[in-house]
Image (cartoon, rainbow, N blue to C red; front, side, top):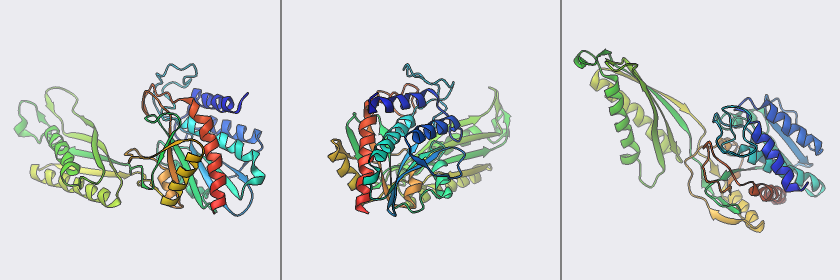
Amino acid sequence: MTFAQQLIDWRRELHRFPELSLEEVATTSRIRDWLQSAGIRLLPYSLHTGVVAEIGEGENAIALRADIDALPIEEASGVAFSSQNPGVMHACGHDVHSSVMLGAALLLKQNETQLNGRVRILFQPAEERFGGASTLVKAGVLEGISAIFGMHNEPGLPVGAFATRGGPFYANVDRLVIQVRGKGAHAARPHEGKDAILLASQLVTLLQSITSREVNTLDSAVLSITRIAGGNTWNVLPESVELEGTLRTHSASVREAVKARVIEIAAGLASAFGAEIDVTWHLGPDALVNDERWAAFASEVAAAEGYATHHADLHLGGEDFAVYLQHIPGAFVSIGSDSRYGLHHPAFDPDERLIEPAARYFARLAQSALQQL
């Protein structure tokens, strides 16, 4: 079996048996077995799921990271190796990321005596729930590590294309939940109540004006209300309505300013109508900020490996790789996967031809980065 086919076979096995965040028990077992079969040492961190492997010896050390969890999506890709777990699918390509880093591990193991230090490879759980990176950091996986690198497949880029950027790249991810409490009434006698649906509707309109009229148009910011829940029949004005949404920015100051305005507008509307509006803010990962030096270096190595390199656009998706970059420098990169359907789509189907070249790229990147330390 060729090296490329081995990695594809591993990817397909992971794809057939996807597991949700913090439930990646069988995935962890598979990855552990494949690494140990190659003679790669595993580090004994106390983790419920996830694997940390290391190759090489010496003081210098860098890290590579793959994510291993799947999404609660019913697969509709039609591939022969579709998910065997109902309602769960690798619709974001973490199976691809894992196979890439498994391949990099094999290549680095073959050249272990030539490494100028150690390469630690993190197979991280729970990226989709934005908790996995923090868990690994708390476990101590970054101790002694000087730089870290990771990837995401990019369905909008062809196979053979590579993109990254120094500075802000992916956005912060915040979730907000808003409870609007008025006074219930008969639909034919609205004057006897405080119409929570009317209040919620006005609040949605007002919130949309924050990013369109109060944030500098040169700054990136998206505030989306994604869920409205209220009422249970046609002739009753409900007592309450719940809204849910998300804020994405690349700037800490913009993030705080928008959050403050959401809370201020909600309080003002509640006061004006004699109602109650409570905003609960759930902070997700901060914006992912690549180190300028390592991003440029990652691009140089990609070009040397034959990739068509591009300067990446700002991305408003979230990525908990940002947590690692708050502790040590590094770079997150995009590698083309050329899928007709995008990330998190039930028919997402990345081109597997990206896997072997990406494995060779990360092996070379790790070896070259160690020489730079």
